[in-house]
Image (cartoon, rainbow over all chains, first blue to last red; front, side, top):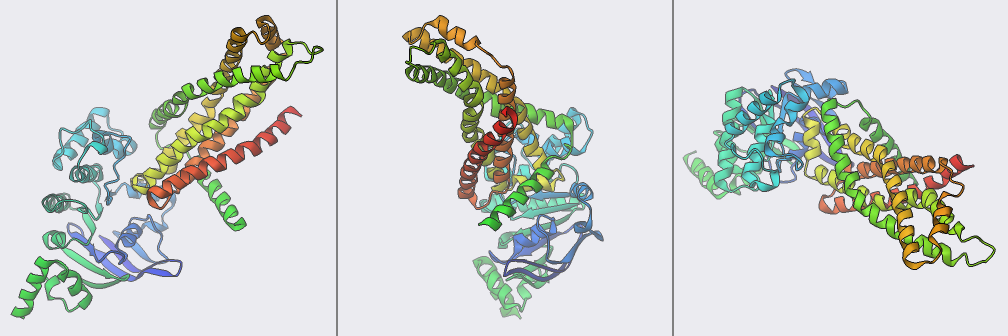
Length: 254
Length: 248
């Protein structure tokens, strides 16, 4: 479980996060949603410790990693798998080497064991048979999958995804969503996904927090999102025509 | 501007402090070291060779054309060429050229990795990204660049020899005698030390600028340019300091 309490973050005079408090539960796809510039990525980067909050705490199962010494923090980060917006695969390494990268550093496994584990992870995300290819030779969807395989290579307790289906076609985007959802359930991870894609929200949003101009205005799930009275959230949801139709249906029933 | 200079200088030394941490795994470090040596040093051999041969030849012609005095022995052309090469050209000039080649390579590579979040990805895995990415580069360049000095020296002399034998600007025997005249092997050591220091500056300054690059592709280009400019200025300043310290 990840708990965020009274989190503030600003850059100079620009207050990006204002008093954010939310809890992300284990085994669920927890989502941070909001329009571009609402502070989603800053919140995500603050959660994983790439940015330091001005005040407030982020605790992982009760442990505040910002208070840990550097070496401890490094050790703790091995529990966190991160899928970056553009996959962030290493250009200098092949697909297999990318997935084996964390194992090279943090396990004493033999080369054969590492290869076996990497191939299992790649199979799990359906990109087997591309071991020797470099990231530049893969499609965007495949890069995301390899990114997920690398993120789960060490069996992390937490999976953090920054806009996992941005730049993907709708079909591939849904497949990536379902993959993340399935892995979250299968491995009992605490998954936090940052997105503004309504399809993803409706597909896998188990616990959703809506961020607007740095404030967490609403929290619920994909079933209750259409019942909201929050005008900013309604505006955000109705930007998608399918969601707008559903919301209008809900309103007429109400 | 002065404030910015002090901030950047402080940040640079803090960066070095992070870089010079014990590698997470020595096996991975050595693998990286070999790769960087190949990418940064071995790949510079051709460039250094070509430049050295031509500069050696040009030095012979220029020196000979300025020593027409009949009271000066023509042997001194060889002597002057050798001293010019080992004292200044093979270290400082080659370092300035490498600042462009190696410096831009390091800055653009790290800058691209920074803006595509690859550096963040390494950091998030619990790996010291600065040490993993930068330490092998700095050590490979600093330790192996003196070999380029020796190569450059030999090829510079060879270039001079080729010009002498092709143009008979001075007798070949005089050139050979000049090369052997009053040879001080300390100058070779001095040149290698200078080169190591210059290359440390090139690698660390470029890595610093690349590692903290921001602003997309434009930012990578900016960091690359800045690396080359700063490295060149520092090389020339350090040249003066090292020469004063080691030769006087």
